Length: 137
Image 1 (cartoon, rainbow, N blue to C red):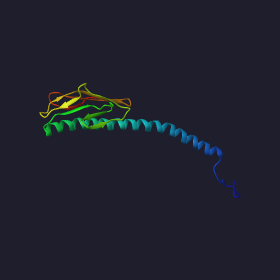
Image 2: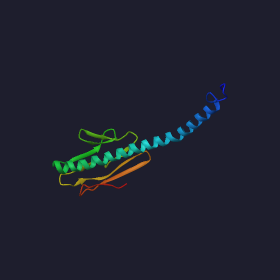
Image 3: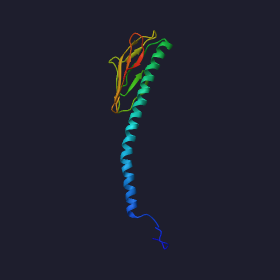
Image 4: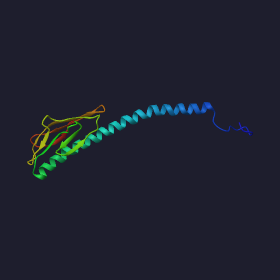
């Protein structure tokens, strides 16, 4: 205490209680933040995969040539020749065995594609007759 009777600082107990409360808040907040970041990475990858599918279809129809998408050699992306759109390593991308192909007449050699990971799943179906890309899950 100072000469006037007012405390001059914090007691050890006050500092320890403050640190304990900060520790509890951190223990609750950081795992939630990590889950949110993983979820956002999944959603971002999902949007990119869907954009690649739709873009490949548009390129085939507009460019007059077939566009073929295959699983990249590392298994974490869609490859169209030299161009690869990758997804994070903790996500698994599955395509039909022959990949997906879009043709100039709008048709496709399609099938189901799946992106899984972070406790989430997203599926698309590419219709063979119309080449339509549809999110089914």
